[in-house]
Each structure stands twice: as C-alpha cells, then as structure tokens.
Image (cartoon, rainbow, N blue to C red; front, side, top):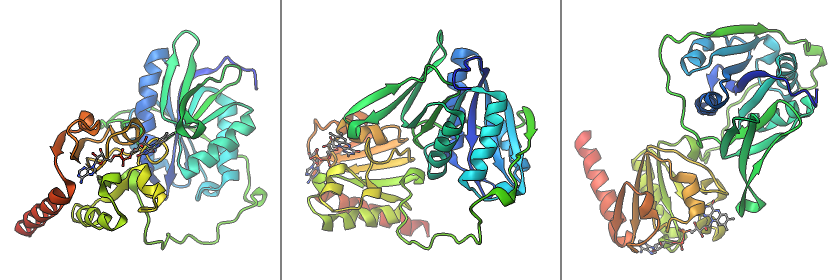
Length: 340
Ligand SMILES: Cc1cc2nc3c(=O)[nH]c(=O)nc-3n(C[C@H](O)[C@H](O)[C@H](O)COP(=O)(O)OP(=O)(O)OC[C@H]3O[C@@H](n4cnc5c(N)ncnc54)[C@H](O)[C@@H]3O)c2cc1C
C-alpha cells in the first residue's frame, strides 16, 4: 500500500461530529477541498463516522460534497481512537483517495496520526496553507516550523493518500446551498465492541469555567503590549463581555504573564476569523496578523499612525487607548441601554 500511487481521484474530508453536531472545521475543509479539487478535476467526498448520523448527509451535500462515505454503527457513538481509526482505515484502504484532510482539532490530530500510521503514509499536522501541483498532483502542505520561525512546505511524494490536518479558522467555510444532491456510499466496520480497549462509561460536559473559545468567537477584543499592564486588561474584559465576545492577546502579553496562553492570537497562538476583531495597543507584526487578518471587520487603536495593524484594519483610530477605550465602553453601554 505504501507505494500505491494509482489512487481514486478524490479529496476526502473527515466530517468531525460529536453528538450529531458537526465541527465547523469540517465546513472549512469542504470549502478548501472544493478549491483544490478544481485544480486536478477531482471529486470532493465527505467521510462520516458515528451512530445515528445518517440525517447529517443533507447538510454535508449542501456544503458541496459530491459523495459521502458513511459508517453508521453503535460502536462509533462516541469518539474513541481505536474504533474511528479502524473504520476510517478500512474505507481509506478500500477506496484509496488521493488526499485526506482533517481539522487540526483534538479529535482530528489524534485520529489522523493513527490512520496515517495504519496506512503507512505521511501526515502533515497543523497546516495553514494548502496548494496542489496540477501536473504531479502533489499536495503542498505548508505549516509553521521551528517555533514559527519558518514556514515549511511538505510533500508526500511516495505514499498515498496524502494526509494533512488543517488549523481551524484558516479557511472560509463552504457556503451552504439548499437541495444539493450527492452519492451516499454506506460502509460497515469490522471491529466488534469486544475488541475495543476503551469503554465509555458516561459523558460529562466540562465544568471548567474559563474555557476560551477564541476560534469560535464572533467578537474578539484583543490587547497588546500597549496595554502596559495586566490590570488594564480589565477594560478589555469589560468590553468583550458587553459585546458577547472573548479577550485575545498578542504574544508579549502572554510572555509577560498578563494573560494565559489560550488567549494568544497569531502564528504560534490561535487562528481566528471573528465578525469583529478589536485590536488595542497591538503593532500588527506579521506573526500576529497571520492569526487574525481574515476577520470580517477589524477595528484598531494605536497611537502610532504608521503601525502595521492599520494596513489590515477596516477602521483605524489613531490615539491613546487609555482615553479611547473608556469612551468606547461608555458608548457601547449607552447604546445597549437604549436597546433594552
Ligand atoms: C517565531 C515567532 C512567532 C511569533 N508568534 C506570535 C504570535 O503568535 N502572536 C503574536 O502576537 N506575536 C507573535 N510573535 C511576536 C511578534 O513578532 C511581535 O513581537 C508581537 O506581535 C508584538 O506584540 P504587540 O503588538 O503587543 O507589541 P508591540 O510590537 O510592542 O506593539 C505595541 C503597540 O502598542 C502601541 N501603543 C503603546 N501605547 C499605546 C497607547 N497608550 N495607546 C495606543 N497604542 C499604544 C504602540 O504604538 C505599538 O504599536 C512571534 C514572533 C516570532 C519570532
């Protein structure tokens, strides 16, 4: 299998679901797979594993999949590495697609490495850019390397399928269109419950209060070194709360211990794509922009009129954040009270 290069001309996207809810990264990958497929005239296929998931097919076809490979089995009710890896390995081995893409989520990272090992093929984890060389059909898989100091482009020349996990929020979601049809291919899994080493006893949602969901936030109020101290982040938290958003930060803020790492935006932090990204006291270094420049609307406050953040800002305010932020908080508060 390792040297089998005559593959089915298909790009597969692993459709990640938990409790019949599809992870947004799958829609982003369907959008990207469609773009890549046009370069090599390939088909785009979703691969769905789970229990009671057949009803999800309509949404998957509406998001642009030409085909859907599905294993619907009680053994796949909850994610377990062993069962999911076995199911995905079996169908990948049977059909041998050209490419398999998965979200670089907790599940995607775990599953992709197990499946790549079974398939004896290469895997590039946490990609931030994908391209296809039309003549060779090689997937150019780009990701930060050496602590983010270089961008490495990795090729899988001798093994198939070519496998990559992709950082959530790097690509735009495939736009849904109603009534799309595709081909459903139902498959089965040979593994039996008695063969599975892990048993799910119960499902308990996390009780952790401070879960930072930057990737899914619609509004992010981010601060940089210009905030000058940890205390001043209270202003950002207040504004974020009023706008129903999360607080983001640049790397120096994390390094100085003003905010914990899950709040970091950028090349070595999180990639985000909110409707509104508010950047206060952030200069706009390339490594920060890499994580937020695809936000829909970017509002930047900086006292330096030449700050690079203004190159990507939709609205730029040149001024002192210590004067402007309290004014903005007051204005939002007044606006909200008129809406009550
Ligand atoms: C390999 C590598 C990976 C990296 N990864 C990341 C990453 O993931 N994320 C990231 O953010 N950075 C990352 N960095 C660091 C990056 O290069 C920058 O150093 C960092 O983004 C700068 O943060 P900053 O904008 O908060 O600080 P600064 O560059 O110091 O900017 C502070 C800004 O605040 C403004 N300011 C100061 N006072 C006020 C005021 N009172 N009112 C208004 N504006 C004010 C200043 O004009 C300035 O523009 C990385 C660097 C390397 C080498």
